Length: 84
Image (cartoon, rainbow, N blue to C red; front, side, top):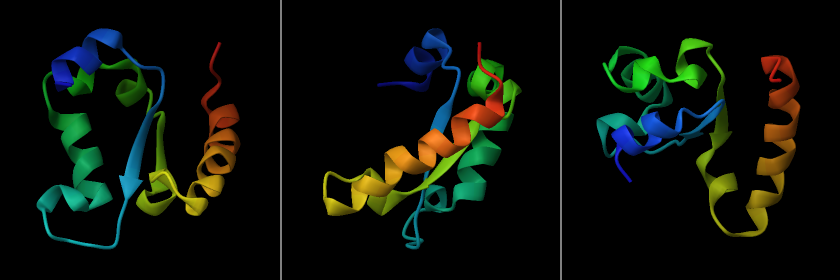
């Protein structure tokens, strides 16, 4: 899926993975968020404009026993975004 496709969908919230590895520049969560805020396409999405970005541990996003924590963390973050 391209960022253009995601931007067209205009998500209310974006989930970004936080990981310890630094094999690629985009492995750094701060660089991911900086990209979202500076890119001409992604910066126009409601989620980015309104800073509705949830950071989850990458391991909790994998299909494993660790992903039990992901829905809990997401549920804790969503009320702070004042979504309607």
